[in-house]
Length: 537
Image 1 (cartoon, rainbow, N blue to C red):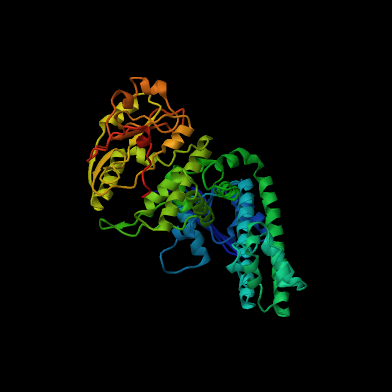
Image 2: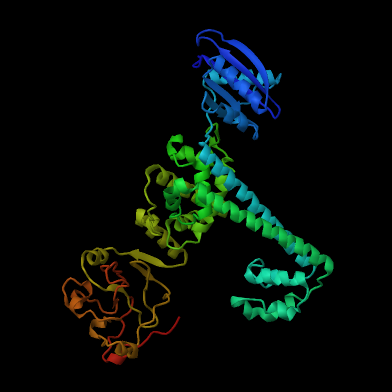
């Protein structure tokens, strides 16, 4: 194998020692080897840097073993080209294993360009990364402490968790402090409830009727103090993180435009990815590094498990958390994508897929500086409307309906400027074709919309129209209805339509559904009959 680096060094890093092996010589000949051992104190790492510089070494490789490589990296940073490789990718062939052989193996791989360089962010991003990761640990400690506190309350038969949705809210913390003091009755403690929780005072009194002994009060006091310390530490970290994010304020605010991405998730994305996307060749490489893309495992032409790789657990956790928040954001593309995937896979897999979408959006936003563009919840349906229609038809056919699609009047209404929306009119209360997005459905009648009564129409200043069985509900559009561009006025169809004003005044007539009726509804001869309301189904 051809060598590409003439002078390189491999470091086998441990807690107390560093073994260095330098390979030097022309690429076409066998290199010379020199090995030395150094300590990990600061002055000893300085000697290592001087020795590497004197040997004319240009590249240094090491494994990312724990945190022991970080002081060595900081000491050598800026003086040589550093390559930190994944330890799982650098395993030596089983056999003799010593520190010297390990350093020589790293130098040999580096000499031939076989070590893939890991992503190491610049120092400001590394400082921000340490803050966000430590905050994550404190939040986990707080959650564990809360769980232990609730467990202790259950041993004392205090059932606050059965009545309150959040024991550690304002009302819950006030009650816990009152329990520690032990000076108030359960009726007085229940009166500490605030907001809607005041409606549950009787249940709170029953929940507080436990066996709270002195031993429980002592433990509760210690745990509350521990929670207060954790809350204070998390607050201090949040302030420090906000200070470190000042140089990246534009990227930080832009990332929060993504549904589900909170301030915590946005700070984690910047801390783990940085703001320079040139370190990743493509969005696929970024997703693979984060561990949110499907795995690639194929052998003998057969695809095996496609589980995602481990990746960056800190970033992956934050992205999945953001995905679960985006699922609850109504009217968004991410929500519709989740439910589309959820129909054929499990919840966790769909959540990771949405996390992949969020990371892709963040990648392009950081790379181009553009804002987030919401595609809308109907984006997936608009990409292939025929597929959506076929799926809906199949669902109706499974229920025993016979469906025939009609498209003609939809195009006619789309080209016109009709301010009204045409929807199917309720039938003769018995046998009327049901309508689903322009489909003629024969079978059992579906539930129909209530018609506006004559009294309500008159109250709104509208006279019911009995001509040809066409009825105008809501605000009357005399000028538009008299215009030949309105398909309802120019070509009314008895017993088939009800013309209603659009939901928004600035939108043209969005859709016309053609549904032919199996039975003829009587044409009303009097206004009272035209405004007769349909029974509730």
